[in-house]
Length: 79
Image (cartoon, rainbow, N blue to C red; front, side, top):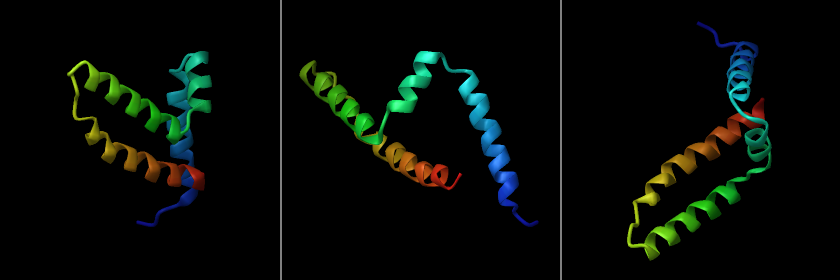
């Protein structure tokens, strides 16, 4: 079965619209202004806090998630 870019774009747009309708205005502003660098800084801050409280979790496991986000960003850029 042939893949149609227009169909994929429409499906993505519907999923995005569905997600956006669940967000508050504040969340929409936060998402719009958040960068991957911001996410990395926040993760580092959480790690440092947990380390100082001796409650360090394996946040390093988020590495795969962050790599997935980078790949997702590449897909989003196409649309």
